[in-house]
Image 1 (cartoon, one colour):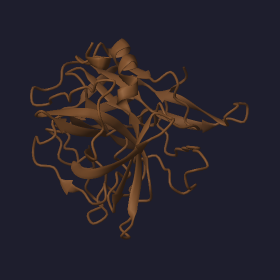
Image 2: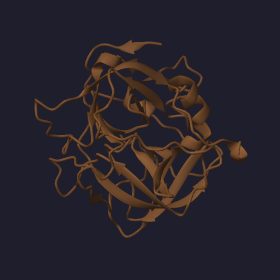
Image 3: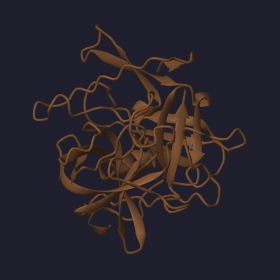
Length: 279
C-alpha cells in the first residue's frame, strides 16, 4: 500500500453513493478546514465519555474511539488521502499516511482539539490497518484500526464491543470533537442524541433527527447505546447532511460495527464476549 510522507495542504474526497440518496447529502466529516461541530449537541462533562479520543494527522482532525487500552477504531478516510485515478475502475484510489504522522489525544486530557497545549501528552501509532474492502469512492467499510505505542492512561476507558446481533434501539448517542459554529476557534468534545432510522444494504446505520447530526471533525467518532449499565459501540461516523440548523430532520451515516466484529477481532484481538445466538 502506498504511504504519504509529505505534509499536504489539499485533500480531495469523492464519496459516491446510491441514487436513493440526494447528491448533496453525503460529505466526509474529517476537518482539514474549519467548518462545524455536531449540530444540536451539548458539551461533554469531564471524563463523561472516556472512550472518545481525538485524532490528528497533517492538517486533518478527526474523532476516534478506544476499543481497548491499546487499540483505537476510526474512519479510514481520516488516516488516508483520496486521489483521482482515471486508470481505476471506480475513478479514485487512496494512499495511507505514515503511522508516525498520526497522533492520538485522550479525550479525558484534551479539552479543545484546536488549541492543544504543547505539553499535552499524545499517543503514537505503531500499526495501522485499513479495512480491506475500503474504497473511498464507494459506500461502506470506512474503517481503520490503530494500535498505540503504549497503553492508554487509566482514565481512558474502552467502550464495550457489540454482539453480532446486538439490537439497535431508537435512541442513540454520538460523541466527537467537531467544531462549534458559534465558537469556531474551539473544538470541544460534544455529545448529541440521535434517532435510529434504518440500516442499509451497505452495512450502514442511518440516523434521522431534527436539527441534530455529526459534522466536520466528527468523522471516526462513536455511535453507541447504553445497556445494563454498559455503553455498547454500534457505529463509526463517516458522512452526514449539511451542518446547519433549519428546523429539518438531518440524516447521518455510520459504519455498522456489528458487521465488522470478526475483522476487528482478527486484526486487534479485541473480541466481543457475546456470540451470535448466545453461543
